[in-house]
Amino acid sequence: MLVKPNRYQNRGSSCCRRLQRSRIAYNYFNDTVTIDTTCLANKYEIPLISFVGVNHHGHSVLLGCGFLGHESVDYFGWIFKAWLKCMLGRPPHVVITDQCKPLQMAVAQVFPHARHCYSLQYIIERVPEKLGGLQGYVAIRRQMYNAIYESLKIVEFESSWADMIKCHGLGDNKWLQTLYKDRHLWVPVYLKDVSLIGLISTKENEGLTAFFDRYVHKHTSFKEFLDKYDLALHRKHMKEAMADLENRKASFEFKTRCNYEAQLSKVYTEEIFKKFQVEVEGMYSCFNTRQVNVNGSIITYIVKERVEVEGSEKGVKSFEVLYETTKLDIRCICSLLNYKGYLCRHALNVLNYNGVEEIPSRYILRRWTRDFKHSCNQFHAPSNTDTYNPVHLYTHLFNSALPVLEVGAQSQEHYMVALKELEELLDKFDIEDSNSM
Ligand SMILES: [Zn+2]
Image (cartoon, rainbow, N blue to C red; front, top):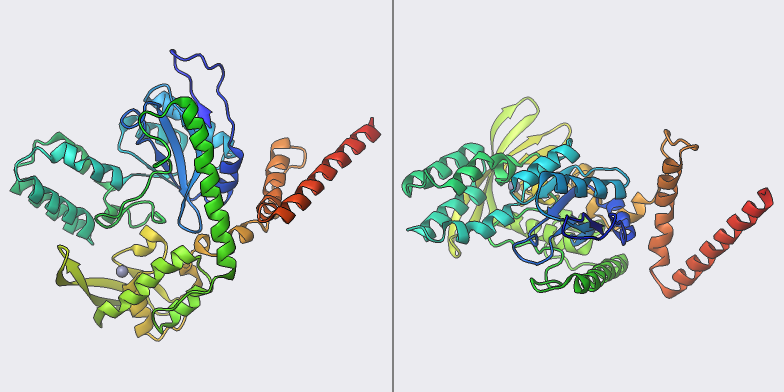
């Protein structure tokens, strides 16, 4: 936990504690990180900022949190740098934050190579407050959601958004102007090249829960928060440990006879498998798959799908899928692979149409697999490890010790063995030190 004191607080120097567990989690799940500031000023009394990732079960994991004096580029920058230092200097590939200029500037300063996106969920949560008072609000919201969630191409979004603005005379609305200016940072259709691993909502009503929801409220005091922090962390850690244990013996119930379902039942964790299963089942709502263009080895298909429109009415939507026949590369215009990290029903349909029996391994993200943590722990010292540099030695030892922590925490017996061995190791260091004096 990080604290940046302001001039009204006299908390002494900044502190960095309770980070070990977050650092272990970050060692595995450091690809995409949400920097959550929703509780800052508008929800809780304490200005809290949390770094949240997603584990291999699709659960949110805390990768660190801290308190700020106030919102400014300097303060955000300070806390980002402090967090990065605690995470051994490895920045995430993708950073998701609220829409906020100081945050945007601090992200650009501290994580210059990360792809920065705004959280769509935070923007959607503000719609009633920002537009609720306008005449024709329900129709405006409907058109806005259609533009955001239903556009498969940038040109579709641009045209739907322009229609909404024109239709309702919203050209002077400042909030909508800012949203449109920043559209490349939050509208899904502009984020098709970003690996978002489920951290942004791509459907209406697809809510994502903030890590501390249900643990803190706006009257929570600082001291209470520290207790709740431990409780939240403990429960989430237990949840992951239980899921790891259950996944080791799990066998899943099949819903189809499709080979893709059987193939990935052996690989994915249960939560991710269930989400993927929805796509396999969804293959049966697709029909009339047909080839529309051939360019060398790249074939373009159109896959039609029966979809629900406005709740219950049935409609038909067409999806363009590109298939490269020599390398078995596949890309669907819906981009579910980028948004969620697994193949969509349309791509599966085209693979099936071409008689591909198994999903190519590059479309099975390692981070969703049951043995992901184990495979990360097969650690070898990088060739550039400097054995005279204490930071390099620390990093190497830290990563090498992770499997001991993971396996040691799995049962009372393992825990006792690990503890005993660690104590003996420390004794051994003491003996070696006294011999060398
Ligand atoms: Zn698709």
